Figure (cartoon, rainbow, N blue to C red):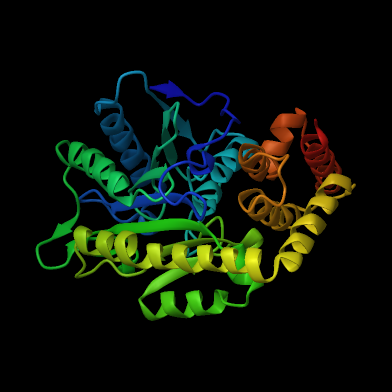
Amino acid sequence: MIEGGPIQTGTTEWLRGNGMMSDVVMSSRARAARNLAGFPFPPAASSADRSQIMEICRRCIESLGYPSGSRIRWFDLRNSEPIERRLLVERQLMSRQHARGRYSNGEGGPDSPRGVAVIEPDERVSILVNEEDHLRIQVIRSGLDLASCLDEINNFDDGIEEIVDYAFHPQFGYLTACPTNVGTGLRLSVMVHLPALKITGELEKVRNASSDMGLAVRGLYGEGSQAAGEFYQISNQITLGRSDEMLLREIESEVIPSIVRYEQHARAQLMTENRMLLEDKVCRAMGILQNARLLKPDEALEHLGMVRLGVLCKVIPDVTLATVHDLLLMIQPGHLQRVVGIDLSQSERRVARAKLVRDRLNAK
């Protein structure tokens, strides 16, 4: 196991832009919440308990078998620099809550014993220790591929359960800190890009339909984040009484394909019936990004989301999808400062962000 070290800043798994339905589906993610038997859940555990849990989990993770050519990098978040924690969040490898170390009940803080293991070089798998639960095992894949995410997460889950005993109830299933995760402890989520539905005024129907089916619709970085750029994470909210197969069938085979068809239809409708409106929105966004001297993160994300639509609809022929995806990551505060090589104030980041975007989009 490799300790800490610089995090790579190249394109990460959720921005590779390949896989099924990748024109609309950015990525698929499976996450399993697990707790060790005999220990309090992290929000109720003492610092000594969390330290012991972290050491047990770390040794367990280290002993698992990994594919040839891969390596596992361990980050003790108590000792990580703020920018390193920010990079891990921006790369979708851990939650903002885990970066802060603060639990919903007010316990914890930056010095709370917690860590994250990342399997490199593809970063498809990350394992969070002492987040809301003792273990959060996460697998991400580009495009719509929840089935593969679930297969891989089950392999890691089974490997860990061979070494430690999980908190499990024969009637309720896996026990978790949050009651909504009790049961399978499984969350399946898909990140989708729905700019055409926003333009045509149909987006609220998707929100309402998802809510009626018990699904959560959140922003780019999950709970509490805004849906700038019309990027949304759609996930199940209830795990009790729902099997893995039931959740997979519902989300991957029914819900997401329907949403993809709605978005694709809205894009086709714009291109044939209201192309001038589409071109105007895309070219305005492109013009701002190519000329702005100051850019906030959400503003840049909003315009890049529209440019992504323009690339896919061939309104902008001289910009690649890879360039847009790279910029979606590079405009984030941690990545921006890593690229520039120095710490920047918020106002300095706005200047640097605008310059980075201008340089990339104006390059010939």
